[in-house]
Amino acid sequence: MTQELDIRIGTLVGGNGDDPAGYIRQIAPYGFESFSITFWQTLGGVDLARLAESVREAIGDRDITISTVGIFGNPLEQGALDLETAKAWETLIDNAHLFGADIVSGFTGRLRGKSIPDSISTFKEVFGPLAKRAEDKGVRLAFENCAMDGTWQGGDWNLAHNPAAWELLFDAVPSEHIGLEWEPCHQMVSLIEPLPQIKKWAPKIFHVHGKDATIKWDVVKTHGVFGSEPFAFHRTPGFGDTNWTDVISELRWNGFRGAIDIEGWHDPVYVGDREMTGQVHGLRYLKGCRGEFIPNPV
Image 1 (cartoon, rainbow, N blue to C red):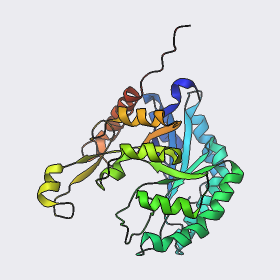
Image 2 (cartoon, rainbow, N blue to C red; image 1 turned 120 degrees about the vertical axis):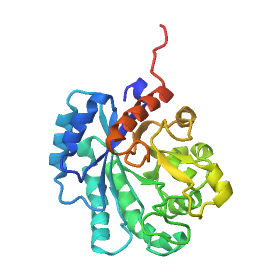
Image 3 (spheres, rainbow, N blue to C red; image 1 turned 45 degrees about the vertical axis):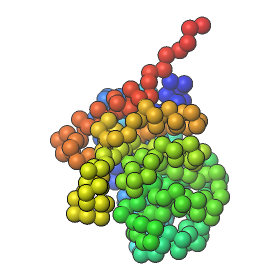
Image 4 (cartoon, helix red, strand yellow; image 1 turned 90 degrees about the horizontal axis):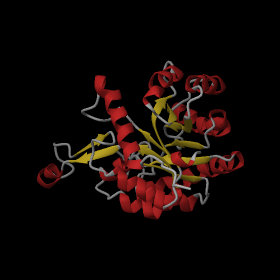
């Protein structure tokens, strides 16, 4: 990675779509520097070698990398799709190198309806071997910090949305090859201040999702967080409450090297026909927060 791109700014691309490479070909000219290729629950029979080849052709000679490949489902349960998710973790670990990526990301899963502590032993059973597999392949595993409407007491998808849960997860599988796919948004909607987390958890932050939040404090103070009025909205960077200059400075201060990939398709304003308008604004905003590398005089 060149010095000026110690932190790349990119976006997510759905691997289950009709033509991921065609999507990349269309949006690459806007200046994205990385792409994170994501799958929902199953790889859907995708030929990963062919997909990787088509993605490389779409990128061409541009200085663009594939930051992560990811699978988002529940690998801790035993339903048909859950078992496919668990298998997809293995497959992506084995094939990440085809994309030039060394990070496989996704949800941890959880035992449905059970508390976070009740799911830890199953997490260890599943991700202990996956962590070893990742170590052998030179791959890191990054868990998104998304609650997916879960709580400490119960949920359907993911354990890794709370700092106390991170302690349990990393104690259960103490591997340097497992960490976080972190973003401020998911902490903000839990009313957790995200910036201090970077200082403590930077060694475990492998990948960053470019997603922000707007907190309606007037709603919180009037209706609370469980009332009829929404109090928080996911936003594209540049439209939310986070100062990403501070985020990027703190990441750099703590040694982060990698990519911030915009997780689009959530902003309530820049949606529909305005989706790419919002994403490209977010791309330019994040590049401005990062700064342009200027070599020192010799």
